[in-house]
Amino acid sequence: MAVPVRTKSRRRQQLEEAALYPLDWVEERSGLVGALKYFLFRKVPGDISWGHTLGSATLTAFLVQAITGAILAMYYKPHPDTAYESIQYITNDVTLGWLVRGMHRWGASVFIILMFFHMARVFLYGAYKYPRELNWIIGALLLILGMFEGFTGYLLPWDQTAYWATVVGVNLQGTGPFLGPFLVNVLNGGAEIGVDTLSRFYSIHMLLLPGAIFALIGLHLWLVIRLGVTSQPWSPEAAGSGEPEEPRPAREGLVRPARSGGSE
Amino acid sequence: MVEPHGPEQQPHAPPPSLWPVGFAVGVAVLLTGIVVGWPVAALGAAIAIVFGFLWVRDLTGPAAAAGREPPPPVGARPATEAGHALPLADEGEIERFPRARFLEGATLGLSGLIGGLITLPVAGFAIVPTFVGQKHEDVDIGELDTFPEGEWQVVTFMEDPAEGEVSRRTAYVRNNGELEGQPSLTVLSNRCAHLGCPVQPSGLLDEDASETVETSNTVVTRIPATPAAFTCPCHGGAYDLEGNRTAGPPVRGLDRYEYEIRDGRVFLVGAYSVGSVQGEGKEALIKRYDLMNPGLHVDGPSAIMYPIGPRR
Image (cartoon, rainbow over all chains, first blue to last red; front, side, top):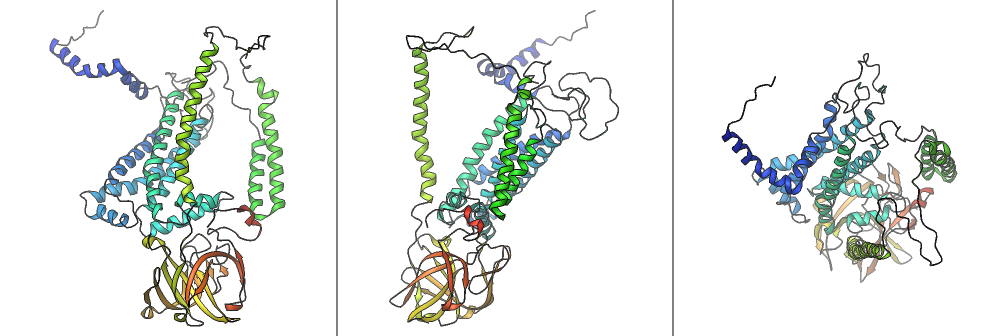
């Protein structure tokens, strides 16, 4: 017996069509709407946890850094004579400057900390194993680039802490065998920290590294979409299979492998 | 979810192996050896090579190959009398003409060439200037007569006034009197030999007697001081009055400035690194090396890690 269907009024249908028309227009010409749906409405294991949100949280932290950084760049002047004053200006004079600078300054730590939590989750769940090794490697590169962002960004306030921390940091990297002494020159833009160092760090900090990080995040996400999300090692479910398999007794250990081969 | 080899096949993960552990131990011993000494490094290298070989053999051996799909047949027709070797067309693949292959190669090759032509100068622009033109002008720090014999002065000056405050440097200068008719000075750099922090004099500074004088090419501030030693605020490196390391993490003594006396004025004409100093004052015997970055060994076994450096 047919369930009575509530038919929509003609007017409502017209409204919906009008509202969806731009989306359909874009979809027909680009497939972008479908791609977004493919990205957002993937199958994931039924029992994934809050731990699985750490990657998205890290991405969010990075986007906050990118946006606040782009806005800080509107007021910041990367020259030894003006950098410190421009930071003071941003903090004390520009409306809400203290807030945006604070977001960028504290968000940097949040970004790094979240990367480590995300990495710990992936490690403890064994999510770096076949076929996801490549994504672990890309993630490690992102961690290195993220820490290099922290290093280059630390110089920009151009106060005593920034200056001497960078002296120590650059010389520390200079103790690397064989190539270390040359690395010092490349980082400093010369034998010592000089007039070119600040703009050099600034360029690396806000153009080179973010570009590389964006590109690697794209690859990172693509592999997540392609390979899917792992469930916990103790999960009774095979990822994406819909129905859980036969119930299991309570878990015995943190990393007990699922008998069915788990998520793979 | 991707099942690269169909759901019924096992993924071809490498079989569990203990060889990488031995390889890692070997690498760790090798790295330790770089610090400790040659024999340990050689031992580590030997361990790493042996276990690395066993690991690679494990990965490529018959046991590993058994779990792997056979390689797809690769067919290339042997060269005929006509001299052409064309690839066999797989089923479904369109036969390709030499012209198409030539055009493909030409497109890729030209793109690569253009990319290289653009990338090389840009990379050079980013890197090469950091190694050239690093030499500064000699710095005039004032008349020799203004440095009383046997007393220390904290001398700060701009290495390159055109660069401004960022080129400000500090030296600790003591006039040692004359040696064989020539004036002798001890001019220590305040750059810590650990990681480059500013070393401080442990003793009183006579700030009231400080004077700022304009010399022929820079502005110099001089403060009389009575240090008992020099210490670094960052990580606790300590030096005696000749710049020898006495405590903490520095790997060598304090760098020194080279000086010349011209018409009774003291010019700093460059700097050099110091391994250690024997004796003191004008009698000091200085083990001198080319100027090196902070943190780099100039003597001892670890010096082999820094055979060459950029010109200063």
